[in-house]
Length: 119
Image (cartoon, rainbow, N blue to C red; front, side):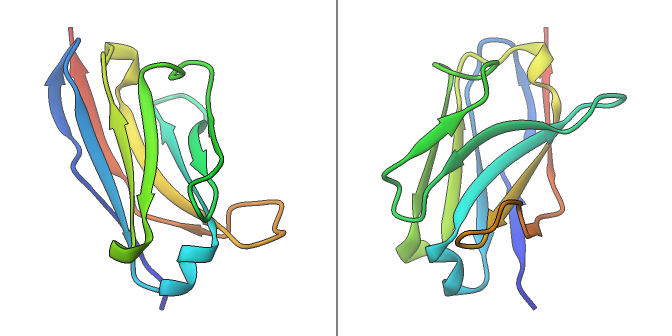
């Protein structure tokens, strides 16, 4: 069974940096677009960032542009989200997701990792 496992979440202070990781169990995922989403209590799920299969193309949500960086290492079956200048409003559960080639939606999701930013 395909798995996406997030790690690296935690409690940090405003202005700090944090890197979360997503390990995928199937090397086929190295050909998929990978994305990060987040959901805060009482809010809808929000797109954070995405990266193409070879890392050549990235995309970011407006609220994180210039602060977050998505990257991937297909040799390690891992996707990363480097988060800098964190704000309390970045507090959420962060989810990793994978989108198959030519799919118009994300097909696989991880269980999420909590990121809490204190003021």
